Length: 60
Image (cartoon, rainbow, N blue to C red; front, side, top):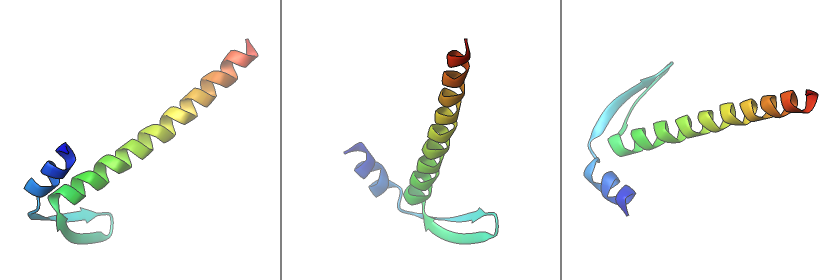
């Protein structure tokens, strides 16, 4: 419910530039994409770290 309210209140367009890509998207969409990307990156790093710690604990 809160996400729906957030998206409805943030519909104005913003300019987004990332690497070689340029475009105009609604603010809510840009923030949602950024948060999703951050979450995926965090999960990938956490998974790698957990695997590293498991390998270390098996050696001991």
